[in-house]
Image (cartoon, rainbow, N blue to C red; front, top):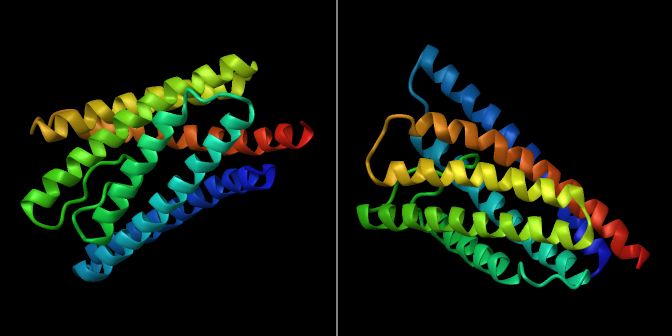
Length: 214
């Protein structure tokens, strides 16, 4: 894979973050407006969220594909399996979104509902499996940082590990029907994972620069 492709993956991370934040503000504004003057159109609200999730998951797949290219460029292949597993699970989540089976939340990965009960359960399980694969990748990213002597990639792995572990606990409680602190756990996990994304984008851009030098 070329350094340009890896750099593009890093840039796309920031585009993704911006898109999610803008959409979040738009949805929050729509809900606030509806609270004062009526009820928002559920169809329009749902279609906007679905479109956001389609773009979000598609970009995530591309980013992790370029991450694999960066790792392989430095002869690190221990992350290949977790990355491929993560990409496959993201593709499954994307398919579920396209078929209206209930997309995960853009920030926490929790199910948004919709579709039949069976599809909803399958979607929730797919999200939980994705979080587990993300934890696996986090550990592999720490290993990459150790191999190439990059404190940044070690930090990326650690931040992801904290955020995804919280998301795993939150989604696990959600699936088990235990409410309690689920919302708070996922609320904390969201910003932590977002911070991991910022570091991930920087890591890809810097990694692309190192690739171009070799």
